Amino acid sequence: MAKAGESQGAGRVKHVPQRTCVACRRTDAKRGLIRLVRTPEGLAEVDLTGKRNGRGAYLCHTVSCWEVAIKRHALERALRVGPLSAENQRDLLAYIRGLDGAEDPRSDAHAVDMPPHDVRV
Ligand SMILES: [Zn+2]
Image (cartoon, rainbow, N blue to C red; front, side, top):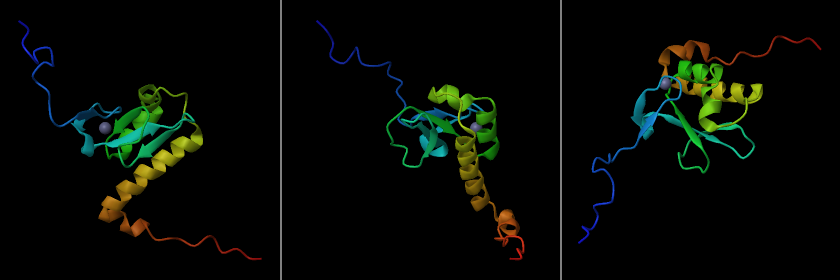
């Protein structure tokens, strides 16, 4: 006599999925981390919905984690892509720096849009 359901799972299934930052290895619920996804072109892209298809990797909302992930190629390893192009790296860093700045009121002083140098024509 086989017991129904016995073969299913270890019985310790967590309801909140835990993700790991590929830079600092901090684990958090999915929402606490930013998902990056591998595009068909082999680039790393921020996945704001968290639902895009493709291999994903997670990073904290911390600029330093993104820098570390890029410097150590942790992102490439996690996403199984080749070396990210300089442009791709710059885009990712620009994204997280923008986010970070937006949450930090101290950065207000630097947010002033400086007009380009006075160009004489
Ligand atoms: Zn982290």
